[in-house]
Amino acid sequence: MKFEQTIVEGLRHTYRITIPAALVEEKVEAYLAAYGNDLKIPGFRPGKVPQSVIETRYGVRAREQAMAEAMQGANEKLVAEKNIKPAGEDSKIEIVSHGHGKDLVYVYEVEVLPQFEIQDFGKIKLEKLQATVEEEQIEKEIEILRKSYKKFDAPKKERPAQNKDIVTVQVTTKVGGKAIPDLDRKELRIELGEPFIFPEVVQALTGMKEGQEANIDHGMPEQFWERKLAGKKAETHIKVIKIEEPVVVKVNDAWAKDLGMDNLEALRQKVREQVEQNYTLLTQMLLKRRILDALAEEYTFEVPARLVDSEFKQIWKRLEDELAAAEARGDLSDDDADVSDDELKTEYTAIAERRVRLGLVISEIGRLNDIHLSEEEVRSAVIREAMRYKGEEREIIEYYRKHPKALDRLLAPALEDKVVGFIASNAKIKEKAVDLKTFKKAIRGVLPTAFGSDDETEEDNDSEKTDKPKKIAAKKGK
Image (cartoon, rainbow, N blue to C red; front, side, top):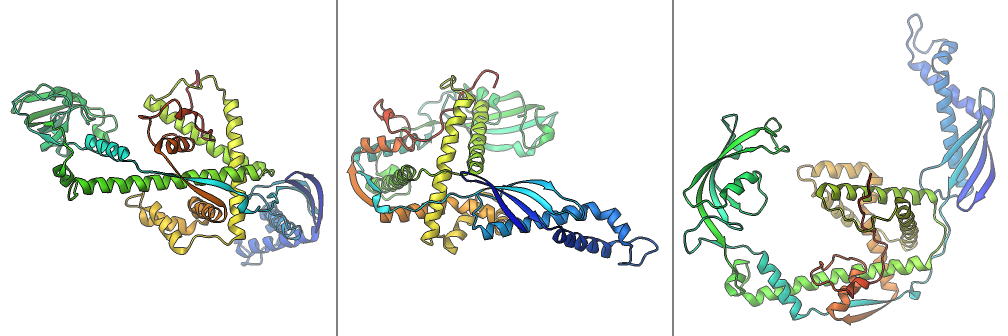
């Protein structure tokens, strides 16, 4: 077996490999013998079929299998002898010559992983921002909680139902004169102004009084769960049983008890703890981002084109899916409409290259420092993923047990967090207490929607740039 390196262009290495004819023919004979043992032809005993008949039937297939096996073995030997670390499993093979009695000659092109040295983490100097929980923020969170808490009571004076009321009704729906038991309700609470399976019913309820009845003609939803009824004409009979109007909630001990707390002070303490937990999480995310930014500045080696292309395709696919979803919701914006696909692809290719490079660095740091997830951490990650699929938990767990590569992809974020935590413990990190405004500005540079947009200011919009994708805009003809 002969290996001859022909091209070295960066991480792309090309070899001309020659496999002796005798080795290939030996494998061909082995495959033919296996086929012959299983071949059954009338007039011949098992295992006694003439070689010429076996070659006529299986010669081409046996040679293809023999060549594939021989090339796989040669490639593995090359990788071992030359200490090559292929970047992924993709490689390019071009056969130069082959045939009965001929050496098998082919060109093997492979991208290799870059070589780089891990630098001293002590060179990384960062600030870890710690936001002070301000009383104003606690009161704001309580007000948000109050507004989201809905309580209803009967109006002081009898009146027709109006928007935002909850109307309790008796409902019977028929299609083609036949009642639909699944839709019959003796007491159904409908909040006017909120989505309902039959919008016509909500429209009819507005203006009705307790005790009134009505018949409403409407269509069944096109996506109704019982397909034979989808889109059919229907009639719904309703009778108003009770009307309740929203009650303004007062922030006091009674309200806190409705929420399961001992008193208002206990509620405030609980809200404070939740805000602190949220700040801590955002602090960790911000620190992680800055550590990754520091690594991106430190390491600038060439990365395998195949890995970058694979990462880019994943990014682009997500963007296209987001565009389709936004279009379906009617949420498309004209912002950035003048940005061409080519410009976006250039930007996202750079993002993909950064991700691949950081991934290689993180992986090498983990390898050198024997950082891995414990069995308990792996088990917890799989169970959390399985719990997302109600009723299919056992199948999901079994899937990851049988597919190690899928399991690696699932565990990658957790392992990355663990490596970043290791880096942080060895870097020079200085904690710095900041006010909420400064903290929000820093966070919006990483997570633009972390605090919502209600209190966003023009100054906040000038926060540090990130590699987050641009807003996708609809283009004519898209």
